[in-house]
Length: 481
Image (tube, rainbow, N blue to C red; front, side):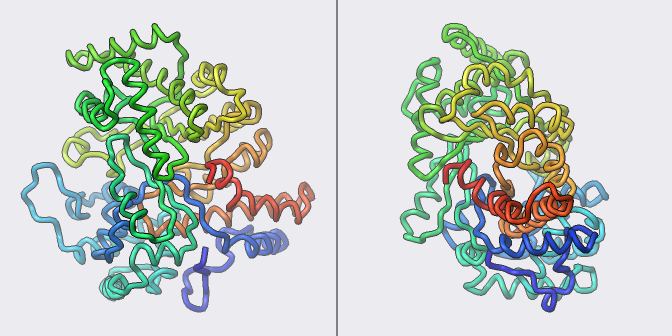
């Protein structure tokens, strides 16, 4: 990461932020952090737009870059009574013109205090100070000055997507696309000759989750792209193999599965085929049972693991989000507006069929995430601490915070250790927040390690080695980068 915090230039960013309050432990954290803060960024899972790096055009304005696409921001402001339309989101069928970007920015700046104590505030303060050199905290009084400064910077060549990618010290960045994506932006990046490494990840949810909108239409498109009969079980599985190979040809090293639960099952081939046929019949008749859809998702996790063992793609499972919980808002604005809510998630029984089949395979890597922190020490750490194929993803989404990261280390290290985890990934749509998020993770990990050193549980030279692993090497190794 090439951008350093400079308290003389950005007074709001204290150089000891997130370090322990105890002076002796804080001094250890400082020493560890000094050795890892500038390491390159490995961003193996995220949702940035590859067209940014393909076209390399200037970002248009501060609001559309920093605010409107960030569901952390939209959910907080909506909870405080701000209409989503005032933030630039458009309802389906709306004929109302979107507000001026400056108006959106002023609305946000006047309510910046709502983010006090949140990770969003940490990330935004970092971006405003370190990337744009604006005054922090943002207020209604300095909103216009900040807006003008950011607009001026965005017009400079140094603030185009590729230049920022290089300035941030990003070694590799993975986006996430569905198997229906043609990856034309990734092709354009490759054809451009730019050396920045932007790769994709295979997210097959639209053609696995039979309850997703437009499932049958997605299957039609899936079959056309793969040139397979996806309405037969064999053809459907072959289409996944074809599309996975296509994604791998553009650098993809992993798949991603955002299922409602972590349930898996391992049916015999004939039973799996019969389940697939029942799902198709139900989808066509508009009478698909939820239990059938869940069973199919469960079977497909096992099928995806089987394919990963063949083609080497790392498998990620992101369960436990109740997507689009606010149904009226979803119908008006669509997904990804901040209305997803964590749900209780069980792993020991749910993953057992998959792990009984493939958990002992050393050539396979399955990375499991959770939004249910109660499962860390009870279920996930013991599972990852035993099965060679299983690794723990970092604190995710709602828990991508200083407190969440510290809870993750405290609840998993005693059973899974450090080496059954995979470092950090930022999982963000907000490109400019990537270095801020990695900086937070590196500071928290150094704070945790400093405590182990101060308590004489780990020598400082070993803590430094672990700090390097957590900041860089574990992610690179786990995601085969």
